[in-house]
Length: 318
Length: 249
Image 1 (tube, helix red, strand yellow):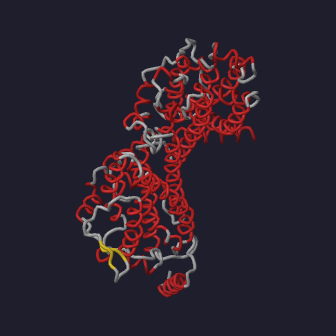
Image 2 (cartoon, rainbow over the protein chains, first blue to last red):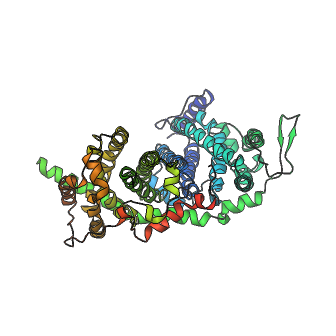
Image 3 (cartoon, rainbow over the protein chains, first blue to last red):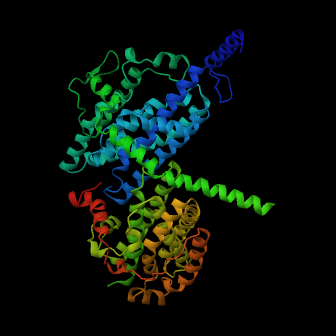
């Protein structure tokens, strides 16, 4: 293609973005826009699928039948989100198998929060309340993302996430109003998940290498620090409401900014977990890799059967 | 002993324990679509268990609810089939276990719908809809894997060889059943054996699998004599209720 043409295409593309017209799979788009989206959407898909594991860890031990059914439904929703996100990535030309192999080889990332272990039933509450809460904060703006298929997938995902967040908060509320043991269990879960949940928004704005371009392309609508501040401001009163304490001695209402000031995040821990040194990184990937490996014979057999059936049908027809 | 209570435990425990086994797959399925499908099966079964055990508690009249019954009995008091407590092993074995059970459950619910007991009939009507879908899903996988590759065929034949001896218990009948059958509350399960045979043989034939010649029948679950596996299932299932007695969750 001539350079002149590319300039025209780029100008038209940016005009669409500026006028809030969605980019659709068959539209021309700059290669970096495509790559950025593939990276982000497949990371998001992996996060949903790896995210099934810490909660799946408590399904067989859920304390009653209702909680068991709700948890099953929730983890099933996450698998469903994984599916539509992989499909959204496919509309950009990504190959689902290749994307999954990249996860297993460590090339592709997923949300670091899932590298923390779920150690008690209260963690099902904390994960729903804080982790899904942070996910919603990140994802609601994505419903207005410039790429059509991703934006539309997010509309449905957000509806379900909001149910997840509420059920998590309901678990925490029940525990906080329960016996001393239950309250301690809830507080311990909050202590362990608070800081990792704040890290979910990614590095501080000055260290975020993708933010500016993503905002220009309207893939992203708020910076990491803006979203983190929103999360703190919404969550602190919720904790107060149920009588739990946010594990941050520096947390203080700042009247001038109309938000909370909060303590420093341990970014060293964040980068260590991203690099693979979290408590569960190896286990999570190993579990997913094994699921794929143990299922290889099933997929081969299903393909072989489909081939045989096709052959039989052609024979019958002729 | 209240026969209806005892019978409801049998139905509830079948759903509960099989639902538990299926839930162990969550996050480990061979493909994401099947992860979702198995979670769905599990959800349906946990729902059925809830209905049957809730009703059992009402029938018993000792103010035990569905959670008390699901989480606070001892091993010998569980009345599920031995088949449903068999370990998952691999996806093929899980589908074979599911198929043998679904075929029986579908035929059973089709008759239980006509129960003179309106509660049972209502639970059966809802469960039948679910079970028809379960049977379609498990039959298709049995055929696909049985007639897939050499490896998958071997795995499915070995699953059938292992599980076949537990299928006789599907039609187990004793004095608990007698009065209930006479009063039209439950169907006689021995009467559906013939139809089950036809259904199962038809699918296994399409799957190119051979019913084992060893026709030994392993029973015990209905009387509370289980395999060693059940104890471990209960250790997980009951953990929270045993560790923190009497709390609300």
